[in-house]
Amino acid sequence: MIEQKETGSEIATPLVTLTPVAAEKVRTLLEQENDPELGLRIFVAGGGCSGLQYGMTLDTTQDGDEVIEMNGVRVFVDDMSATYIGGAEVDYLDGLMGAGFTVNNPNAVSTCGCGHSFKTANDGGQARACGCGH
Image (cartoon, rainbow, N blue to C red; front, side):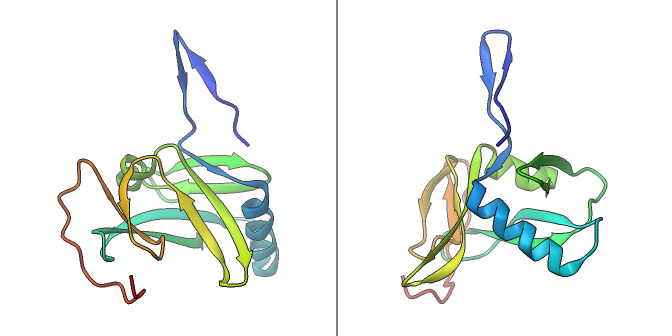
């Protein structure tokens, strides 16, 4: 996990963190791809029932990306997405209801029942059906 850095009298929060379980799952996916240039891209796009939705993909770094390395994984976040997910934690859950990545985002003031869609206090996005049934 990235250590928090003290800047003056404030402690800077990492842009995004991965839990050890999420990092292990991403490392497994990256090993299957066998491409050392790949990392995990975390992004935000318009849509979903709360106005914004999370996305993740294996990708290479692009101009303007924030590149974070933690738990043996490189994470890429574009500037626009960084404004919505700063301080978020990505976890991987595997349970009776299924398995998948989940985002714990301190910027979200409301989320969809599926956990893939969210709204921030500064976002006036319009809700759209995401098909999750919530």
